[in-house]
Each structure stands twice: as C-alpha cells, then as structure tokens.
Amino acid sequence: MPEKNRSQTSWDNSSNAINIKWNWIDGLISVLVLVVILVGIYFGTSKLISVLNVKRLLNLNISNIDNLTFSIFYGIQVLLMLGVVWFFAIYWRRSGFRDLGFRYYSIGKTIWYTFLSLILIFIVSFLYVFILQRVFGIDAPGSKIDELVASGNVSGNILIVVTAVIAPLCEEVYFRGFLYPAFRKSFGVVIGIFLSSIVFAAAHLDLYSFFPIMIIGWILAFMYEKTRSIFTVIFLHSIYNLTLILILLGRVQFIKMY
Image (cartoon, rainbow, N blue to C red; front, side, top):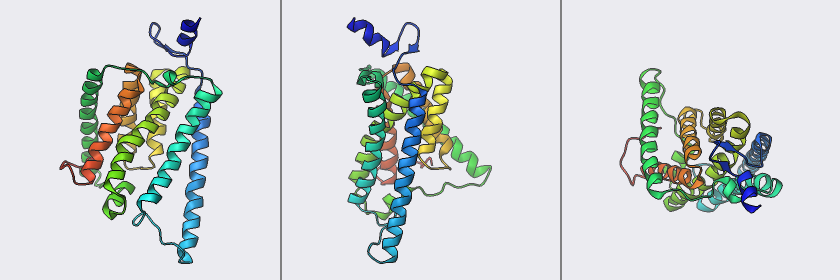
C-alpha cells in the first residue's frame, strides 16, 4: 500500500503523466493571493514612506535603501511565496516535498545541462538586445538591481546571497515545483510551460526584459520536465543569477546582456 500511494502523488515515469494532488485552480488562486498581498504591501508601504518623507520623519528611496530594509522587504516576499506553496501543496492537499521535486538527480548531468542552458540563455539575450538596439533603437533601461548596486548602500555579499541562493530556491519551488505541475496536470506540457513562464516573467515587473525572462522560464520548466528534480533548476537559476550579479558588482568582466 505505501508504494501505491506514493506513485499516485508523484510523476508517473511509464505514462509520462503527473498525479500531484493540487491543480491549476490552486495555482491560479495562489497567483492572485500573491498579487493582491504584494501589491497591497507595495502601495501601502509607498504611501507610508511618502508621508514620512514629506514630514521629514524618514528619507528612504531606492537610492538609499540599506541592508536591513532590503532584507526585510525581500524576506516578506520569500515568506509569502513559500507560504502559499506550503498552504496549497503541503497543508491543504496533503502532498510531500517529493511531489514538489525534492528528489536526487545526477550531479554530472545537472552541471552539463546547466552549461548548455546558460549558453542558450546568453545567445537569446544577446540577440534580443541586439535586435532592440540596432533595429528599433531601444536601449536597455536601468533596473532596480542596477540602482541598488550603483548606490552601494546594500552590501554586495547580501546581494549575492539573495540573488544566487535565496531567490533561486524560493522561485523554483514556487514556479517550477508548484505552479508548473499544476498547469501541466490540466493543460499538458507545452501549455504548462507557457503559462508558468508567463507568470514567471510578469512577476519580475520588468517590461523590457519580459521576453528573455520568459525564455529563461521556458528553459527552467523544460529542464524540470526532463529531470523531475527541483535541485537541477535551482542550480541553473543560481549559477545564472550569480553570473549576472558578479557582472553588476564588477567582480567579473563580461558583456551586459540586459
């Protein structure tokens, strides 16, 4: 009986089907919950900061945000993202961590797939920026992370830990471990990859980089589909983010993709 129950709540290798307990409705509700809460926090906090700035009780903006403030704001986002996964998958649907992709996969293959994926990502990113600049005359605008790095108020070590460790972990658990399987279960692999990648790109709130981020989402979801392990996509996401943040911090000399 234990073996039978386990097979009903994990990936079925023989039929290439997925039998997780949560569904696309759970995934959609989780997206709406995150949007409502994060938008509420964003506008509420912005209004409070604006009032305090006017009254000269506080002087805070993206250019002077410090380590503590950055850690608090990002920590809230992490807790919310992992919290909805825990509620819908673990608590509500009584699933296990294995259903979220916490399973071993070959280290050698993970490194090889990561290498190939990074090459593809950088090629796509380069072509995207090249076309926008040379054909449409559109230059890449500065991002919030660019401003944080330029201000120097947030420690480079904190930025590295957040972008290369914490962000890949929580984002992959949510987008690939939870959201993608929910869409895949009801709509199939192709639509599942497409929908989860759209949400992944939209969550970054960067219109200029929407397309390349969506492509990255496709690659991550495809890798998760093939390996069925959350560790492989966390590793790829981590190495990619680490490369970019080291470039921004000036610790690695490379071409800025976007």
